[in-house]
Amino acid sequence: MFNISQIALLIGTLACLSVGQVLFKMAAMQMDALQPLLQRWLLNYFLLAALAVYAAGTVFWVSALRQMPLRLAYPVVALSYLAVPLLSHWLLAEELSMRAMAGAVIIVLGVWISVT
Image 1 (cartoon, rainbow, N blue to C red):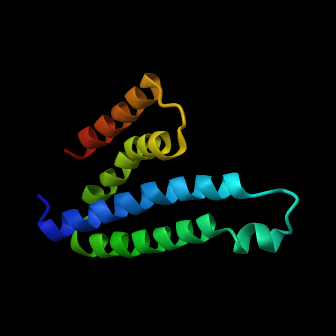
Image 2 (image 1 turned 30 degrees about the horizontal axis):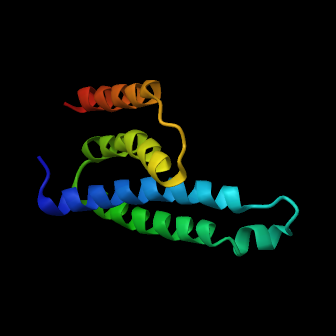
Image 3 (image 1 turned 90 degrees about the vertical axis):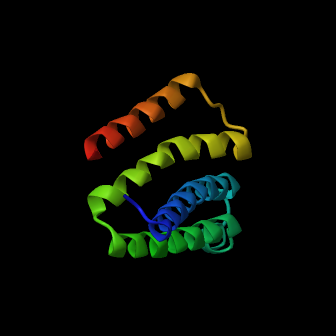
């Protein structure tokens, strides 16, 4: 179904989406409402890193779409519903409930069923 190049591009996309979300959360946690707007946004290294990671993810995604149909590639994005809560639990010590994980698994299964 997928060759090694396509799998690598999809994994790269998924990794960038997931890590980018955690970096956006870290950026938000670092923002102080009392800081001037430019300082809050332009000097926030987590925000700049998140934007760079998302840019790399966009390159992976467009490259993947050049090689495969969107209907096959897009379901990989659903895996971020599993990856982001796990990363936020491990890196940010956020709560990871079984109900949230069950919901994420159901989403992934639903998307998988829709493309098979």
